[in-house]
Amino acid sequence: MLKKTTCVFAGLLAGVIFVTAAFAQNKPIGIFDGNGDIGAVKNKGSVIYNAAAQQYTVAGSGTNIWFNKDEFHFVWKRMKGDFILRTNAAFIGKGTEAHRKFGLMVRKSLAGNSAHVNAVVHGDGLTSLQYRAADGDSTKEQKSAITAAGVIQLERKGKTYTMSAARKGDVFGPEERVDIDLGDEVYVGIFVCSHNPNVVEKTVFNNVRIVVPAPASLVAYKQYLGSNIEVLDMQTQNSRIIYQSPKSLQAPNWMVDGKSLIYNSEGLLYKYNLATNAPAVLNTGSAKGNNNDHVLSFDGKWLTISNNDNGAPSVGYVVPVTGGEPRRVTETGKGASYMHGWSPDGKYLVFCGERNKEYDVYRVPVAGGHEERLTNTPGLDDGPEYTPDGQYIYFNSVRTGLMQVWRMKADGTEQTQITNDDYNNWFPHVSPDGKWIVYITFLKNEVAPGDHPFYKHVYIRVMPVGGGPSKVVAYLYGGQGTINTPSWSPDSKHIAFVSNTNLLFPAFPISKH
Image (tube, rainbow, N blue to C red; front, side, top):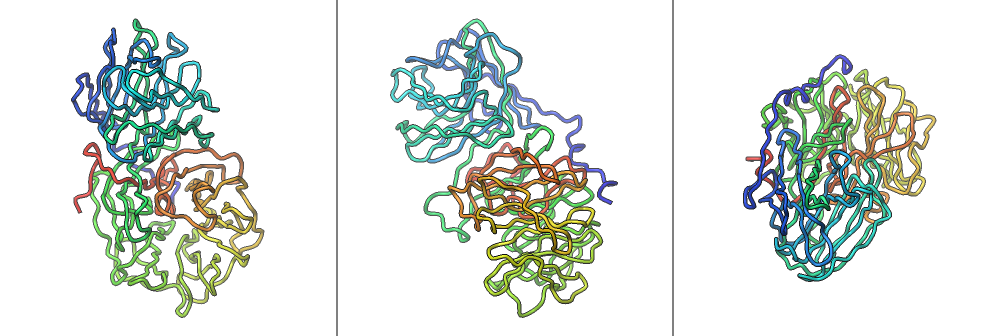
């Protein structure tokens, strides 16, 4: 049925392109407060914002960003405190100068000789962290081991600025870091410089994000950041923020008609209409403590949910996708159960169960009955999910040290490790066409192998279903609740996920609830 279903999401935007051009310093555009030329630029720069694609095309001239003064075009927002800037970007055309440049910048002022820090990519591929420690000083540089970066990130924490860079599809390479005091309130944004006063160069910026991360004082699982629901085009790796909320939204599932998502927030489930950008509560009866482990059946008629009202251990239920009173499917007198997958024939559910302080993968009949343990190794086994043909179950396991993706036959035999790298890989989700797996990756220096917390630097990666090289399709700030459960569109062309920030933008739909 999934193969016969057409995803309507892409069609929602067909023929609808909203483009805004801005030249004035103080005219808001997209997520930014203004834009303009910095320094004595001979040829005027500009920015065009495509709202449908959430894409910025920046044209910039200028002699250079070097020595004691700068000339370039800057698209900026005023910010205070800690933040993370990130973008995918690429020049348009071959260009004139080897040192034409684009990047991310944090600037003390809009004066041409202002102190600043920037993460910059040059026309010849040189990628570096450049900075001017004080107004009028000479610019200094720390060269990255990565060249020709297509993804750059610049993070401020206190007075420390950290640049991360990657070629599109790769994980970030070694960081470059510098300590500079630019003051609390700064100008942050994207820029282009042609390195030739007589030339205007253009760069396209996608996936432009300004993230306000969790403060050090945040109490995990008691306090939460705001949320973005994003939809990622798997071919271009360009993502759109379709909805924002100051609350914690988690684990979007894509309904089989392609028209809506289901996510959880504050114990309730919501059905989000992709055409109207409007969520509505999905009735789950007496289950008012729904967590982020909820999954649609392959035929789209049922949901399995995981409910832990009043802090009690999570219990598995099923409920019609139209809503109603849920029916319990996991056995009483057991530990917590976190539901993760349906068999394609609708007869079985697989879940992560805590039994005697061990977390393993279990299977239980949808009609009710005794559970069957499918894994029995020490340590956490989690995130089980059937392939569309019902032959295999993918899951993640910490049994070899780091968290990795594994696969077994539907009866639990032939358990085989699929990923084997230096990261912690969670929650493999098989595309409806059975060809691909997406999963979320945590950094081992940030997260213990058996943990998947909120508010971390993470990757969403994709790999062939039978194993093979993985590539990054999304670089984000998220973690718990990002893609805990299946989030592929029915046509296997998009995924939905949640990223997190304490900063919301009027440019995107914002929750009114």
